[in-house]
Image (cartoon, rainbow, N blue to C red; front, side):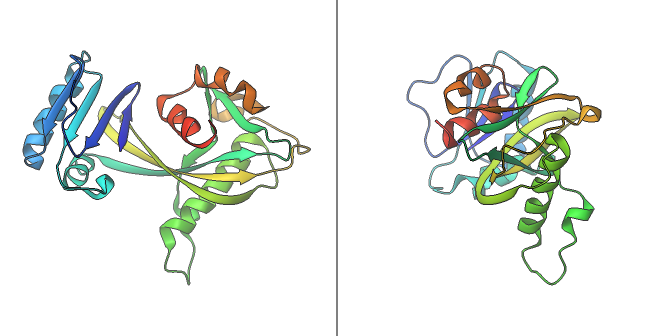
Length: 218
């Protein structure tokens, strides 16, 4: 389980790594207060590239005490996005702020208007993912094939760290549709990319996106 902070990571493990690096800050979970102190140390010292939080006995790390204690330190921003594939097997990428990225965005109030269904969060994420893909790429018709899981990353907003949790979906769209980048969001290129060229994307994308692509495509 990982949370990304640019190219640095916060990782949750069941046991201490055998040969930690000098750039690893390894702590065993004791309490939320102690964890906050360790996080502050990690955030202030960029010599640490990896913050490893060890909590023995938890097989499901994303609901472990250490994970819940860590994420409780921050405001969580829910978001959703799509890895879109066409009938040729190509994947759709956007280019924004100097990086290749996948279309995604925050889940807002209109995405949550799903009365009569108990699974509000899941449907809101699906609604947001489709909406964001359409808005950022110009696609008019896109369908969700399956859920891919979530990525987590930390960033600074208004001088405070927040966590964005992005729920990802695998999608399908026809390559014959016109692509139109959403320039108001800093997107100036939308491009279908064959699997053989994904390595070019990997070297110019965010660490969290790289992790998703390596898990799903390669």
